[in-house]
Amino acid sequence: MNESSTLLDVRDLKTYFPVRGSWFKKLHVHAVDGVSFSITRGQTLALVGESGSGKTTVGRTILGLIPATAGRVDFQGQDTTAMSGGQIRRLRRHMTMIFQDPFGSLNPRMTVGSIIAEPLKVHHVGQRSERRQRIDELLRTVGLDPRYAGRYPHEFSGGQRQRIGIARALASNPEFIVCDEPVSALDVSIQSQILNLLSDLQERMNLTYLFIAHNLAVVEHFAQRVAVMYLGRLVEVADRDELYNDPRHPYTEALFSAVPEPDPRRRHTRVQLEGETPSPIFPPSGCPFHPRCPLTRQVAAGHTYLATSGVSGCGNGKTPPVNFKPQPLPPGLLREVGYQGRPSLVVAKCMDDVPVLEPLSSAGTTSSHCHACHLRR
Ligand SMILES: Nc1ncnc2c1ncn2[C@@H]1O[C@H](COP(=O)(O)OP(=O)(O)OP(=O)(O)O)[C@@H](O)[C@H]1O
Ligand code: SF4
Ligand SMILES: [Mg+2]
Image (tube, rainbow, N blue to C red; front, top):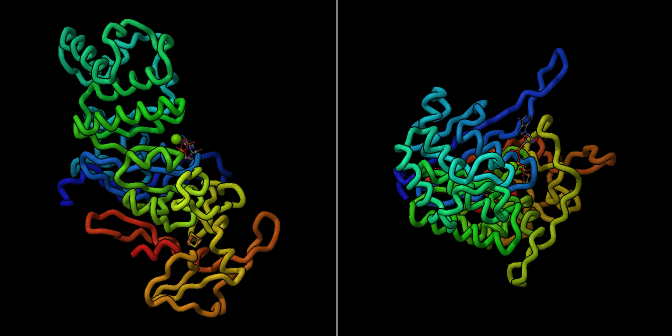
């Protein structure tokens, strides 16, 4: 994979929303807090995480719909965060979005034809008759009859409405599409039809997707790479097969264990996460997952402690590295904190070390440094 095949490169992206604080202190929602990844042209990166983790905000910031607080977004080698409003609007011809709610995202007072024609008008594409032809062609492309162009969104089923949303996204001939949970609102039987359609379109048009999902099961056959997001940060980024066969981060394991797995060889140990996701206004110090991480408690209970050359931390009970040596717990490893109203021991390093994003491969993709998932290297 060479550098020129990278269509989108996101570096240390931060998006904070101001919220009402006190007179002395301004408060912010840290919706996206230092996210880095890249997507190869013609491929799909899935962005997975629970509700409120910041997935949509990443997508909207990339498209310039929300200003970035810090960091950069290189699209086709150009930093979009440094562009003017006019430049961003012109760029949106090449990057667009498909939304989760196929009904809410379509104007009920507009006909399907005018909904699909909207981006063509905004970007001044073609004359009236050419637009008419393009609408017919787009409806056919997404598997709908061009005679439906005069109908209104309420006359269609959920799956058909999502096809209309896809036709609108394709209208300006984009190269990159943020698919924001495009199948979560649909019946399971319809989900696979829409996923197949997106996959066919990707192959035919060499499209690049950032595919947002709650559920790891949805993206398994769809994405080449998967990024797992928690509380505004990426905790693990890996190739699909690597992640599905051997998830390293305890939060990824927790997401997997929530998915029913019929194949007993791939069943994951049930990881029960305690407590609520912390507030993104006051994210925890160090590793944002530390208040809920089951590993810190395993170490506290005296389970596993890994000491590899120069790296120390808690182990996740997986195949240890060659130079694995179980160690007695060194003094100061654990710290007592109040957690959900009772005293609890956590690994001090997890509280203090801000996870560092470090290169995982020559393609410049990254993975967080966690004491558990560090083993991937
Ligand atoms: N305009 C805004 N102003 C203030 N806070 C916001 C705004 N938009 C999003 N947030 C907050 O930012 C955080 C991330 O929201 P976001 O919608 O990106 O999450 P998500 O992962 O897409 O969630 P979901 O899976 O529910 O769609 C949440 O805490 C949300 O409440
Ligand atoms: S850094 Fe510590 S708290 Fe965070 S996921 Fe890894 S083991 Fe858990
Ligand atoms: Mg969302």
